[in-house]
Image 1: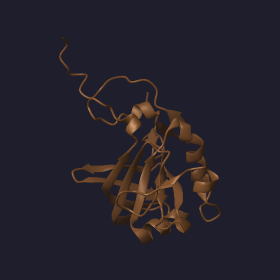
Image 2: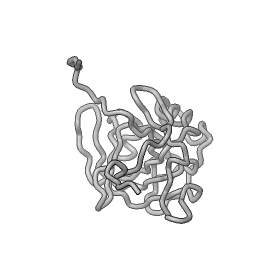
Image 3: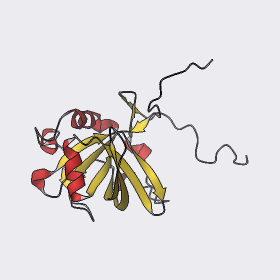
Image 4: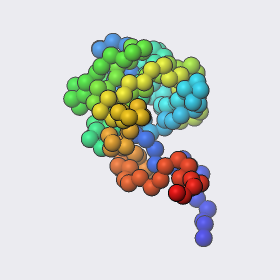
Length: 188
């Protein structure tokens, strides 16, 4: 039986990503984001939603750029720490022993320890309430070659042990249950 439940954002699990921003080493910062996702595949577009009072908000608004860095089980402590500490008070790269790395297109740094870095350029900022959505064009992607299948050239994030976030908790993704289209595939 279903029972009424208060309206809320209950679409879980979500990716837990570290978003890096800044255009010079002195203002580099990292913010952990749960409100992120794909908007369009052609052209490639995504979004992040950020509270205006967060330190990274003004940096991203000013520069119009950021990098979505996918996280892994090995980065769970850094992911959480960068979400609860403010870049106003510390250098998150230094404190968490993360390595800023130059991207292909944007000035915002990549996080070298992330298996996949998605360079983004903001095309619209949409105020939504508690958060503003940064609608963005994906301008470059940087993949750790260890996770690229030599035969197919496909990026295999599952081998990096990606991190998910659900109701205030972090999880690994677990075992594979099927592949796209498996339910209609003809049996041999």
